[in-house]
Image 1 (tube, helix red, strand yellow):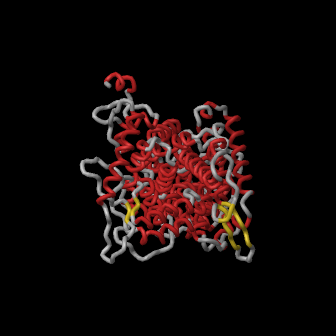
Image 2 (cartoon, one colour; image 1 turned 135 degrees about the vertical axis):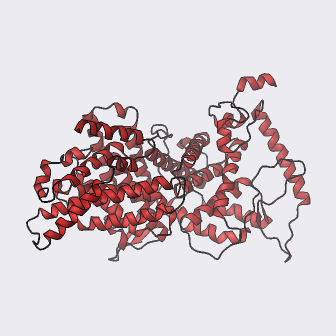
Image 3 (cartoon, one colour; image 1 turned 180 degrees about the horizontal axis):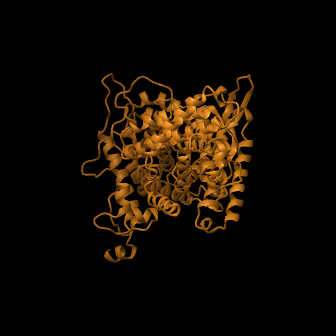
Amino acid sequence: MVRGLEKRKACDLCHVKKIRCDAKKPTCSHCVVYGAQCAYTPHIKRRRKEVKLEVQNSVSAANIHDVPINPAGSAQPVLGDRPSAPGSSDTRETSNLPPLLDLVPIINDYFSNFNIIFPLFDRDAFMQKLEEASASSRLEDPATITAVKIILALADQHRVSAHPPIPSFDPAAFISDAQPTINNLVTGRDGDDLLALQSMLGLLIHYQGTIHHSTQSTVSSRALTLASAIKLVHRLGLHQSRTNALLDDATSLQRTRVFWIAYILDREISMRTHDPPLQQEGDHDTRIPISAPGFGLVHFTTASGLSVDFDIFHARIDLAHIQGAIYKRLYSVRASCQLPAERQSNVVGIHGMLRDWLATVPTELHPNNLASVVGPHSAVRQLVAMYFTYSACFQATHQVGSHDAEWVTRLVKYSQCIISLDTETGTGSSINRHLSTADDLLLEPSLSWAAIVSVARDCARLFRMVQTDDLAMISMTTCTLFAAVFTLIANMLTVSEHGMDSEDDEKLIAEALATFGQLTAIESPYSATSRKMHAACVELSCRARVARARFVLGQPGLNTMNRPTYVAWLEEQARRSAGYSALALVEGFTSAEEKPLATRMWRAGADGNS
C-alpha cells in the first residue's frame, strides 16, 4: 500500500483533477482553495467504486427507516434533509432549503428569463428531476440539489420576477453551500457529471455579478473553478462533435450549449485578466447550435412597431471569438515581442472584426436605439451587458483602460500642461504650442479616435438603462463604464486638438461620477482603492472642464460679456488643481500591480523634464 502511494504522490483531489500537487502538509494548496480533505488513497479508481457502493448501501438502509411526515397528512417535497446513516461520514449537501413547492415558481421564472439568453440547463430534463422528487417527496441527489441552489442564486441575482418572501431563502448561503459540494461532485463522481459542470459554470456566472468580484480571493477562486470546468469539458468530450453522434438530439443539443457557455466565460475571463484562454481555438469542432425561440432567439419590437428577432446567444459566441483574438494578437507573450508596425496591423484587424460584428446586429438594436426597444426585460438587460462587453473589447484593443499605466501617465501629464497655461493666452490654437498633439497622447494614433469616443459615449448612455438597485449589472459594467468615462475625460482634455466638443459629455461624466461615489460607500476590501480612484477621476474631470473652457474662450462666437466669468472660473480651477499631486493622481488610477510601473514612468518623465 505504501509503495502505491509513493508512486502516485498527488493527493486524491489533484489526481482526479489532473493538476500538479505541491504535497504540502497537512493540506496541499489546491485542497485549501477547494475546501476539500487532503487525502492520499492508494489505487484510487478501485477505491472510488467501493465508496460509491458503500454510499448506495447506506442510502438504501437509511430509506427503510426514513419516512417524512407532514402534519397535514401528505408529504411535502424537501431538498437535502435526509439524515446520514449511523456511523457514516456523509459530506453531501444537507443545508436546509425551503420546500420544493415554494421554489418551483422561482425556478420556472429562471428558465423563462435568464436561461433563454444563456441556456445553461435543459428545462425539460431538469424539471423532470424535480417532478420525480415531488412524486417521491424527497430530492436526494446532491448534484440536483446543488444545481437548484445555483439556479435560485442566479434567479435572484439576475432580476427574475418578484415573488412573495420565502422563509430561509438566502441566495448567498446557497452559493456558499454549493462551492464545496461542486468540488465533491467532480472528485466523487469520476468527473463525468454534466450537471456538476453546469453548476460550476453557473457559479462562474454568479461571480461576475458579485459586487466585489475583483477581490484577490474571488479572482483566484474563479480562475481555479474555470480551470476545473474546462478540464471537465474535455473529460466529457464536449469539445468534440463525434462524442454527440450516438446521443439523442436533446442531450446532444444540451451538451453543445454547455460547451459554448464555457467558451464564452473562458474568453471573458481571459480578456479581463490578460491570462491565456484555456480552451484552445484549434482544439474543438463543436458547431454553434441552431437558433430557436426560447434558446437565445428573442423577439423585440421597436418604437415604430417593427418586429425584430435576434439571437443574443449567437452574438455573444461571436464576440467571445473576438475576445480570444484580442489576447492572442495583443496580450500574449508572442504579441509582446511584436514590432510596432505589426502590432498596429493587428489593432486595425481587430478593429475591423469589432466593426463587422456590430454590423451583424440589427440597426434597430444598436446602442443608440436600445432605449426605445420593447422586449423581455431579461433580454434587454442582457443586450446592455453584451454592449458593455463590446465596449470593453474596444478599450482592450486600443489600450484606453483606466488602469493602463502608460495611458494614465500620458493623460495626467497632458492635464498638468492644461492647468499651467496662462488663462488669457492659453486658449484655442495657442495650446498646440504648449502641449503634445493628440496623436502623441493616444497610444494608437491615426486610428479613428472618433470611433473610440463614440463607443465610450454609447457606453455611458447605456448605463442610464441600468437600475440603481441592480447590483449584478452594476458589478458587471462598472469597470467598463469607468474606462469609458476616462476616455470622455481624455476627449475633453484634448478638445483643442480635434474639435470634437460635446456638451453632453460633461453630463455623462457627472452622472457616472455620481454612481462611482455611491459605490465607494459600499464597504469592501477595495473600498480605500475605490475612493482614491473616484477622487482622482473627479480631479481629472475638473481639469477636462478647464481644457474645454479654454477651447470655448478661443472660439470667435463667444459673448464678450461672458468672458470675464470664464476667465475667473479658469483661474480659480487652475489654482486649486495646482495643489493636487500629479503623482498621486497617476497612482490613484493604476491597479496595485501596475502602481510601481506607473510611479517609475511618472518620475522618469519628471526627471526628463526638469
